[in-house]
Length: 365
Image (tube, rainbow, N blue to C red):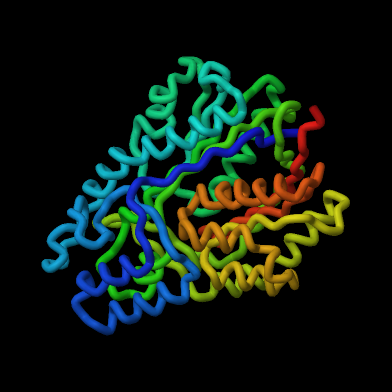
């Protein structure tokens, strides 16, 4: 068995309110039809605000990356990745620091580090930079999960479970950090407009071990499952000359709605469970959450935590599900229950659906 002992989250300094990004779009898109389409997407997104590592999307702020907007200049991939490398570490370090502090684990106590990101990469990678900045042991074993998209936290958790089961003394630090806003495209294509309306930047970290923390609340990872649906073109994340290009088909909510019931029921049956207390679902978008809810006949408040994270942070890719789990944790603490089951899910390229059954256990000490 493996347990999430703590969760730490972090967002960058620049807060983008939805009215502000609509005003930004009005001066960025030269054709009125395009910014009005963008305004409509923002109004239907269910997002009130997001965060970015750069001030470019805020009114009256200097531009770091997307300057010379009147000339329709698109920064190259190297420029965007330079900003990624200069900014992602601070977010990741803050989230990891919070996770270690909340678990009562010193840097020297971390035996393994898994760094997750799909919005930038290099060698030496983020796992090397984090090892140095957090002052981890020189013997820490490092892994990187790159370019898997919004469900990558589940893959990293699975690796952490394998490590914990193999080494009962292991303490695995998982870091997910993304700078989605760096890949904005000044394009009127529907996929580009939708991506700009949905995505934000953020980081989250967890510590996983083979033992529950007797002094604190732990989240047991009971079982995980993965389903690969044959729809490879429905969600794509391609490296291009001018940044990374997102393709997000309108059919994704339909795919999720069509398949999630079977995946959900199979996992619960495998665990000998009929019902769960909470749902933690990656808020890939309002339509995806609504399709998930309809497929499982859930009441409106069952996905309250997911909608709340979407509203406050947007879709941050890989760390987003950990933000949702942190919010579900708050609800569990407020409930006064001694334990509770959580069904967690995320979606990404492939089309991939990752799910997990987890269990909150309150300390008895």
